[in-house]
Length: 155
Image (cartoon, rainbow, N blue to C red; front, side, top):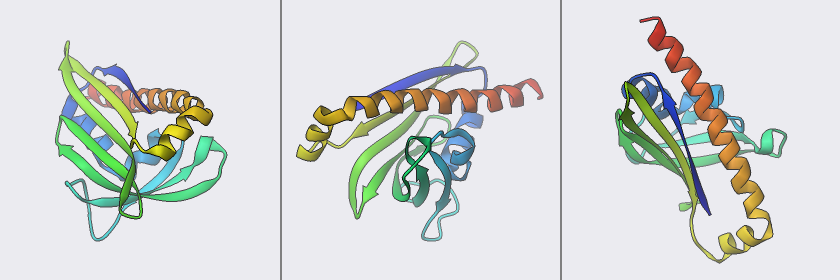
């Protein structure tokens, strides 16, 4: 199961990337993850850096922590991470930024790892989760857009 959403932002890719790649900002934008922190001495985005996110599933619960590892980290272009269960990736989240018409197209995507459990989940209600993820990705990107476009206007 996977999906993506793209939102145009009238702002430079570098500024958008700074907000997205510093996971401590996640709680300002995400409907479900209300805080995040770097782990193992990491102080910012880097390939392989680990962080954890505090999640309130569907904005109501249950509430739990997830451990994540950065898988893509190219300033101004992309940021990605995998959600781990132990050392095994179960979900991948990715932001891709592309210059477009005086601003930036920002695409957020997710992809669940393919395995028998994921296939069963997809059949037994996974499409509801996919719709929720798409809606929440759009909310996240729209919230980021407000901040970066306001910043761009005041420069």
